[in-house]
Image 1: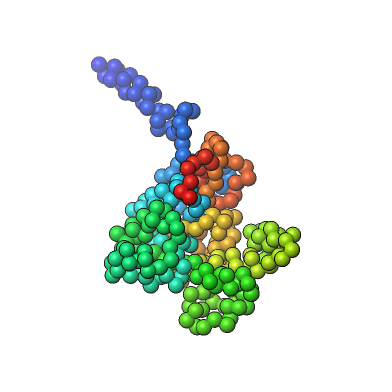
Image 2: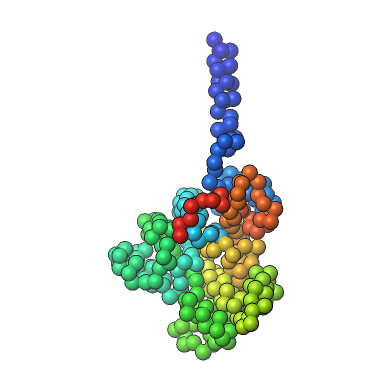
Length: 294
């Protein structure tokens, strides 16, 4: 009888093995995670590994619904790992919005007053409101990190020097001036070269990108007090290759343990495209034909 029970147990294990091993050939997975060198990694294993970081950058594709779903899942799961440490920040909110964002998070103002009282991205309600609502429900800070767009436009027009003429109140929304800048970083160099053949090439374009990266990095560093960890949401181009925000964060607060995640779309998720190797510590591949949110 015991031998029969053992045999039945073995048969059930064999039947269930494909489920536990992952996807089968006829599955249609919406996403898969890979390490920087192209090895597949499970979501829960990745969460365990990244939970030891000081800062995790989730590089999204702004119109990809899988990204926004995964951001919320990751926020909830990291918060479960240590609810006293993890808080959030995002490119989608500018530093001069922090006051009204805090008023909403602490329940001082109504949801509708928050949404009507500040400029939000067009896809806020579907893509970012769930993140803010989660932070509000858990009484966890949510930091507006991006530069006010008027100052990015100013740099695009007149360069970094134009920021020096701003009032002290305005400069409070910026990183310390003068802003460090390395035009040889591949991302900024590529941006400069994109417009180099144009009749009116703008050498300030990568600087406008840099003031966004610098501001996000400064406000991340400023809010990383002892024992705190941040999950930051931004467009993948702001943290790919550990450039952009990551480069600036290393200037402002060296020695942090930083983890980067990026998102790419592929026709097949069976293997990571070699062009995506080393774009980030972890790469989320998403079906390229996924329905976009806008």
